[in-house]
Length: 395
Image (cartoon, rainbow, N blue to C red):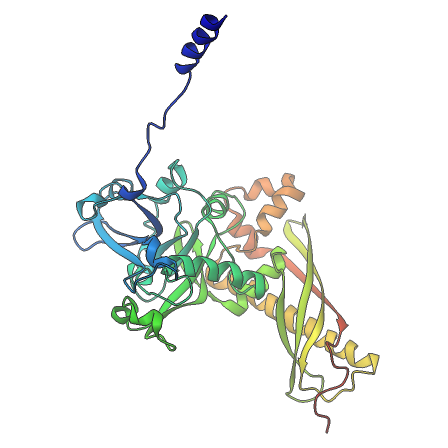
């Protein structure tokens, strides 16, 4: 019996597998950010940011640089990702990449065929953010150290996530979102755009993360609209605010509107938002009815109305609705006239709800979007005036 058990164990040994692609931790480096610029001698310049684990932790940090930035030039991004041992002693691991920064030049010229490499590569996850670097080099964005997270790419990734959650000024686009929208028949992709403020050379120094007022920092300032793989233009964060309402992606945000009388203003904090869009072609024209319903509370007011009067809330809500409908309609007009691109995804909704009529626009949805009729209805409901009933100061 013992011999039989031993024989079984020996046979099981051949079923065990090893880690054929294992790398020793000491011989690897974790890539958290990737940037793509135009090369000087070749087509592309690829830059990667690798973090130093000991410097990322406040318990083990010794004051050295928290990350290392390296660059290589070549004609193929896939080849460049495996050639960094030319200058680095460790093997780069790309599975933890948090951001991909594209230079404005690359996006303007539509040199984005390398996106297929990121989408196809089995070692790269599809949950990193894609960003456009405005008025500068993409590599400089990865060189700016900061007190929060220390790493430029880790800070940017968190920044975009919290921005959409807290205010909704920039849509959080990951690789899988970009691929899905780019391949869709009725929507154009929109990517966050950042700008480096200050001296890029000083931004890479350790002193920058120790300063109360950094010499250099990266700010999210707009969104880039892509059409047919090229940059069509930029939309401001306030404009994208309206786009996210239409798409039903607002989780919480603040809306500023004017009081009924005078130029004074008040702020409405949205806590719940729900959007319903009906799409149908009528008499040869695509029609969309967008209804947005929100709930929230009064966050602050300069208005003189007494909040004990219910009519005051009705006036506030009317002003909010008017302001937001105006903002969204203005963005719709801009997307039609300046970009000729459907950033809302209305074409996809028409495809889902009225496919019979959408088929005629399958390859020419831009023409259908240009002539479409879009009706917007914004409904706000103020549930509370906060912790105070009347204004702090009454005149």
